[in-house]
Every structure is written in C-alpha cells, then in structure tokens.
Image (cartoon, rainbow, N blue to C red; front, side, top):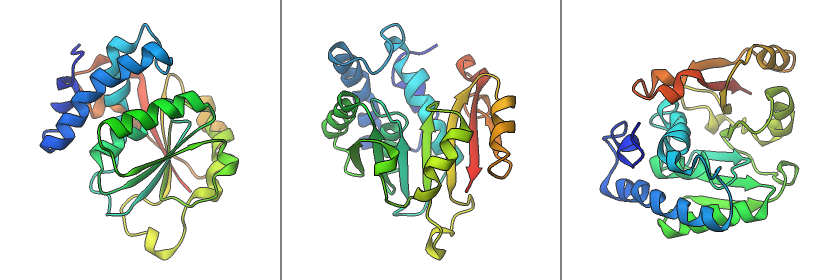
Length: 218
C-alpha cells in the first residue's frame, strides 16, 4: 500500500497543479500537527493518505461535477475529514466544518490556512447551534444514522434552486463494517438509502473492501 500522495493522486489525474500541491502538503502538515494535538491515531498516521484523505475523497467520486456554489456541511469533522480533502477536490463548492472539540477544529483551521484553502469555514460547537442550510451534510462514522438524521434535517436546503443536480439534497456518510441493523433502524424515519462499496471507486486498495458510502436523500 502506498503511503504517499501518489496513493491519492493516481485516482484524480484531473487535479490541477495547485490541487496536487495541496494534497502533497497534507502529508507534512498532519503528522506535524498530530504530534501536538492527536486528531489521528498515532498508529494510523502513517496511513494518512489512504485511510483518511482517499477515504474522504470517495464522496468526490460519488458527487462529480457539483454546481458552483454548492454548500456542504461536514459534521464532526475532527481534524478536517472529510471536509478538507473534499474542499481541495471541489474548489467550486463551499464547505463548513463543525466539531465540538475546539483543539481539533484548530488543527483543521491551521491546515486549511497553510494550504491556502479559500472555500472553507469552521465552527467550534454542536450541530444544534448550526442554523444554516446546506445542499449536503457529510460525515465520517460520527454516529448511527437514526440518531444523525433527526439532527441534520433542519440543515438541508429545499428551495427550488437547490434541486438542479442529479443527486437530491441529503446526507452522505462514510461507514465501515456491518450496516444491516443500522439501515433497518434508519428506515423507520427516512426513505431507503443508497449504499455503495468504496472498493468500486478505489479497486486497488484492499482497505476499502469493507468500507461503504451511505447516501440518504432528505
């Protein structure tokens, strides 16, 4: 398994020189920040590019060609995943990253500033304090769907201008493991979600054999 930026960039040959440089810089910034503030398991930091950056970018594969001005909320971003990799991949979109742990938001903020990201904002707080509307809410294994959906319904846009893309507005989660019980529980409060295996996007990375993307229109 590759441990450098090439593990990501070979799946995104369309990235501009600026985007490629931003991806490369993540490999310097996150290990340095992780020494001060633990946002990634110290045993896993060596797998930054595949386990965290590429994992996050599965959402970019799922939502290609989003319209300019699309607004995306990253709930429970931690040190900036999936929000920061997605902001690099989708410069035409705006990302708002929220987390309840201030020191983690500090890391995400500093990393974004260091690589010159202009399409991200940050909030230290709880989702109940976030009143704005977004086209999509994204998260990475934050909580079960039946707990998450009621919290973020209020944040999903439903005006006419927000329905021009093929995928209706909603929630996109990155998850792993057995999801049958979780999906059954969420079916009581929402329509049936779409579940996709990440190995379809990144077939050469065995890490993704058990990883899923769950898309819940709301």
